[in-house]
Image 1: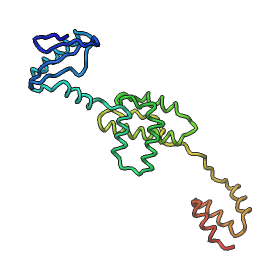
Image 2 (image 1 turned 90 degrees about the horizontal axis):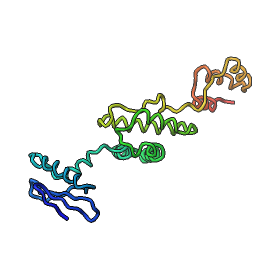
Image 3 (image 1 turned 90 degrees about the vertical axis):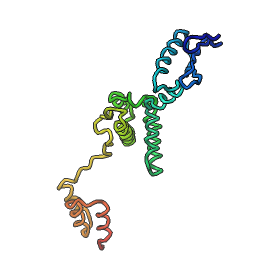
Image 4 (image 1 turned 180 degrees about the horizontal axis):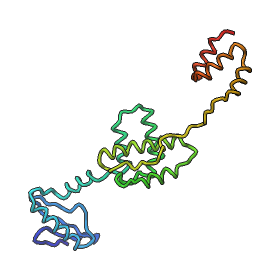
Length: 221
């Protein structure tokens, strides 16, 4: 059933929903991008379209819908995947980033708009990570911070919500404690005579392990 009006036309579909259309300034027939649950909603759309059609910058409704979809704020997954695609990375680095996105970041942030990410959301995600994998956690956080830094540059965020202190720095695996003077004296005494001086050299000059090995290899027996 169709209903003619002063501007546009309404039609009730078999689904009981309403369809609205009108002849635009380009003399083409333009139908609303979606149907309406009530006749009043369809009429309201026509009133709005009539006001737009009276302007010199009128754009067809479906074209406007397409432009709005393109300009819609991206989700985190959309933005992060584009961020990754825009970078020249070594294959293994790219593979590592993709794993971190898929395993650690997208399950938490994927469907959220980038503009909706907050420090509280980031802190909650960080607190929920397993403490058994501190290095991987730190890498995932560093990636999140890098992606959102670009979002700030693109003006999708006013500031980066990644504010967990030192989260990008994994804890050291073990504490290094230098030998005491008494312990060093024991080491020198226990070494073969020709290597005692080498122990002192490595201790007092802070030589790397590789250097100490080279010196030991070049010492005659």
